[in-house]
Image (cartoon, rainbow, N blue to C red; front, side, top):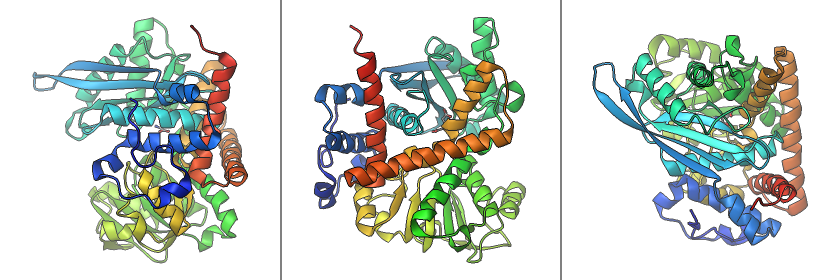
Length: 439
Ligand code: GLU
């Protein structure tokens, strides 16, 4: 837990810029990436050592081994995690991801990012994250349901509307949230919709939640454009990832007049200099299972696509896309981080040298958890808002978060990511100081 990023730990932004390359695995380790950014921001704030220890360490980590009967009668044991990084500002909050390569270190890093994200968004939550090592692509719906229910049952004492509120993340969705909510409710003998967010509309979900992360990205993009005196119509966007975040962001940004010139997916990329018809591209993927071979654009190499000249590059898939290897070749003015942790710590230095305006993940993709907060509020009050109210309040909170980060950047003379971390650390540290240490 106390592993220190060997190059970036405690180094100032200036010192980091001439640092030699880190070992590749270290560069890709998400927990080291989180620590590097934390150390930089805490150092800039001159934060007390003891407080740094508290903030650096997760509050609780739970590993569960989930025995599940597969459809063919075999029993498999899956590994699941739930990490609560902080409950200083409120209950832990964050998604659950299903993927074959989930690790505890990844979930730990993601849980700390949730703490910082909720603080930047200024919503009354701490940070948490969950994950199950499994491959949803080869599991049936009933197998997924059994995994979800057993995982939920095994973390039951950990979660609750006032304790820790899971939500969708990679490869989990409204249906998975409905199963989690039902399992929790059956155990407690009362329907408790506020235990998870990202639920179906008919089960206490919020209007606008499905689009929220993408919409938040668009709002952040519009704020960033103002800094460059650009209009959406003059803005070429390259989107990497066409799932819930990238797909929704592309739809909404295209509707707002942005030119989505390229979409990159795991199996290819499609390009159109005049802007892709995103609705038609979605339809094409629905029919063929892939974005490639789309009549409204040309296929191109997915690695090369990342380096296309554009105003906005929107990585909206996984961690570690912008690295010390790819960052030097980028040709974007704004890097809008729709995914969690798409940029490695050494890449930050390269982006800074290139003068790329980074909208960091803990700000850019905060729209999802912000509307999750709205969902939790609506569930608890039993009164549901119109989509317009949700979207207006989301805009207000995203703009406020963006402005606060810009103020920190200016006041402290740091880049946007460090500014976002400094803002978050300040807010969480303030809550800890007010609460005091319980002994
Ligand atoms: N998984 C999303 C994120 O990483 C949403 C979390 C939530 O709504 O609690 O921000």
